[in-house]
Image 1 (cartoon, rainbow, N blue to C red):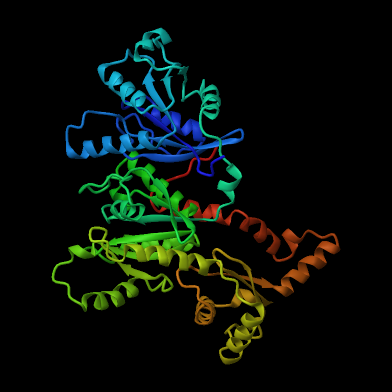
Image 2 (image 1 turned 135 degrees about the vertical axis):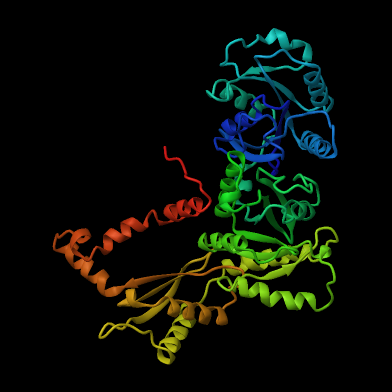
Length: 490
């Protein structure tokens, strides 16, 4: 059995329901779906698990005549998807007779000498045609589906599973993969860098801001590690987002940040330090993800000399002083300058995110900190920090035990963080703190033993603990709200 997951490509004309079928098969809203023909412009990748089989599903743009350079690039990308696939799904609208373009699509698929299935979609609509109307395309077998109503999809998945190479899904799942998302404003060079890092053209690159609408994924090997690169759509200011499709792209970018281990925040060398870049960095920091600030298009800076970079670095650091732990690198995808160094930084940040600090060393630092600089408080209610331990990694998370901890000022937390960073290499990743008040915990335990209601009578501390269970979801909703997006609840 192979360790590499097989690939299945979906091809067809625009607006036949390819993306709807894609979403139905992977059971997630990953591809952009709208009534506008030609919504999908990049190849979108999603993993499908059916019974004990797994495979990558590739949703492609609708095939059209290459009437300009941009459209020709899209068609080349579709051909690449066909070439790398183990099975091809040709999707047609069952309510319309096949056209000359459909014949060309069928010929392209059959020419690949891969297994080809004909999928007649939208069979739930009136006027759908029988299978006999499509036999002259020369593709068998034929499947009738309705992606919108999930009709016929199960039979299609079953047949796909029987006709693709078997794979050891366990090996795929157990592999230690570093997920890296490329994020930033539109036209910051994300897709160009994505293609350069991947060594192939998977994302559409053009001199048009907002070319990428979907998220693109690819996996590469570097120093015996697998790195999954995710190219995302550019994030505009909330007031400048287009209605509909672009808001889907922003939501998808935020999802990519949540799913990533490390984010590459790209900034155009000619348009540095905008407020939106700072906001995106804040989203990454709040999500607890690793971050590398990448200044792209360094080759396009006019009049630069050997001192330009040294002059710019402190300015950028000033604007991102709330994330001083993020490394900074200047790159050019066109010339290849420092591009491969990004991989070294990714591996280094990944090591730092998984670093475990010794408890004894941490407590020595805490004692030194409290002796030389005791935390301030109110009269007779000074915080007492007794001991510290690291409870989690990726990102590193520290728990501090003591009493009157609710009076610990945010500036003192920053002081503790700086002290830890000076003694342990946590560059490239945020670190988090939790404070556990021992006095309050004892009171809660005592009330529970006495049969009293700790939620209502023990200063509400357990009630707060219950509320914190959904803290991550609330933070996510707040981040989405900044971009005018409300997540629908079922």
